[in-house]
Length: 353
Image (cartoon, rainbow, N blue to C red):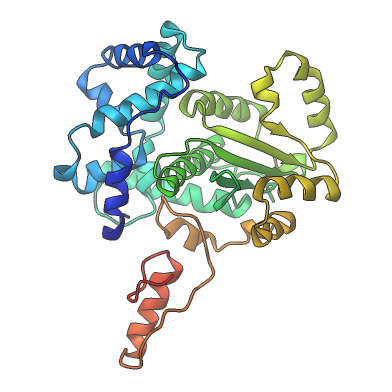
């Protein structure tokens, strides 16, 4: 789950202090530190564990956690909620408590780890991990959401294509919601790792080309998901691109647009038609032609789902195998092993990927 060569990056992330540059005084920092004191030690640890870097080092190398890692990680999360709640102390406290309730309910720790055979579970959790793994595999085949690519502002891109079929009736809404949370958690972990905790927001692309309403989850599931996302991921959205939105979506947006804040409307882009979509993607990725072509064609989500699920949780998906300089002294079986390690995102023996 965690590669040894990336430990130093995680330590660097954990030593990155919360940023309060937007505040001309220490008022915001003081308020966030006061909010942190509202929580007991167990709750503080839960808040810190929202950072993937803190969670994974705590799980795998706890004895090497930096002294102020818990404080820094928890305060970063509190700051995001504080900003998201317009710096209202009481509302922030309520929002964080609700977020912790959701994270306990959906067992975010198992969502993060269920695709890896690390033998970290008791019998009950092992059964839940197997169930989650089955949900993810099934749902990602129906809607292959991927965390792949970095935009011009160094933000990770989350790409969501249309669903190709309705959810399995036997699973109900649970599988849909868990898979959406999995994708969000993976995006946050990858963004944190890739930017070394210097960028907190992500770019999300919803592609509605070939959308069919019959494949959509029930409205009740969408409402539940909206509440979870709003509570658990405040101040995380940089840009939302809804390409080729259906008429009903454009109509709803036009109705609510006047009551939305400027900050919200500036994040939402709804290009319609190939030319408009092309222009929007060009703005987001600038001179990265390969990434723009993947977005335009939809091939960005043409991935092997099993391979995607097995790759490190905190790394971008890249299926293309980049050949190592393997000398002839390696055996055929060793070369095969090198190939497998490379496509799953591991470091090549000669350091090249």
